[in-house]
Amino acid sequence: MIRLPRGTQDILPGDSEKWQYVEAQFIDLCRRFNYQEIRTPIFEHTELFQRGVGDTTDIVQKEMYTFNDRGDRSLTLRPESTASVVRAFVQNKLYGSANQPQKLFYNGPMFRYERPQQGRMRQFVQLGVEALGSKDPAIDAEVITLAMTFYQSLGLTSLKLVINSLGDKESREHHRKALVEHFNPHREELCADCQMRLDQNPLRVLDCKKDHDHPAMKSAPKILDYLTEEAKDYFDELKQYLDASHIKYDVDSNLVRGLDYYNHTAFEIMSDAPGFGAITTLSGGGRYNGLVEDLDGPETPGIGFALSVERLLMALEKEGITLPVNQGLDVYVVSLGEKAAIPAYRLTQELRQNGLKVDKDYLNRKMKAQFKDADRNQAQFVVILGDEEVENQQATVKEMETGAQEKVQFDKLVQYIQTKR
Image (cartoon, rainbow, N blue to C red; front, top):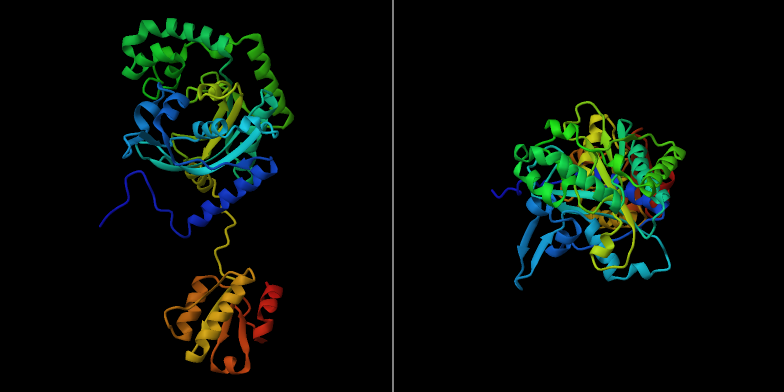
């Protein structure tokens, strides 16, 4: 028997409806915030992620699914969507659109070669937004508000928002120098990755999973102590906008995120639900001024976030939240005898064409078995057709909850069901 690859999953009926529900809720919320959908390829040229995500990140160094195609071009299954969205923004000259900033959302599978664990897969689905073209901290607050509103609209209450500023270029240069001076005496005590990061991107040392308990981490210089006046003002304005929206947050100066392109605002939303597990992050994002230029576009600021659907569903489960997913049928058509077969099929299609959720028997089962199938499918009504019903052009309609039955003319059936629902 061929099994699915490690780190992937089959989403079966019964669960897929939950995915459809949260995706539909996200799309509706993005519409209300005036974000429009963008769809990018599942694979891109490898160079896009090397330049866009960063050569020093674990994603690029260890986690990408990369292969050469028949033309010997190096391609990579997308590990995240921001680089792809920015590439599309540049290639399609969306910066020239009269509609600015460009406010975009996406929904799709991502791929990273990680150690599979609960809520973390090698193929996973992300919902996310990107807002390109504005330096206003108000849009940072809007992006964070959209993410928080989405979780809260689904009923989650055990949420924790953590924010930080990674500063502007000058802030980061001063902080970088301080980090190198701080960690250099401990270089040999750090993991091989951190020793390399200390030369390439010292800020990434603070995000190390192996060395996070090292004493030097606790006393490391904080980026907030090196912010320029401009960067401080930006961060203060962001907090004022969040306060105005009554959104609670904690400031964590060690929050750096795992991608090289972030600057100024960085944030994560976590679950405090009991039993959620060691990895509490539900979503994260931040500002990436400079990324568009790195991908050969004009100077364009941007901010966005991505959330994991898998981890969202875990959080809902841990908080005991049941999504209002209706899996039942409106109508189940029971057919008895050869004369009823074609009329039953015709009525089934007619009911469906009028917006009703309908099914019928396709296994030639007896009446009792068909009614059991209607029960399994949580049908609200059963429409019964036998020889007599065909003869009189009347269906017997049974309301399953009350047991009430009524004869209804075929040409009145759609109206009758729609009125009774």
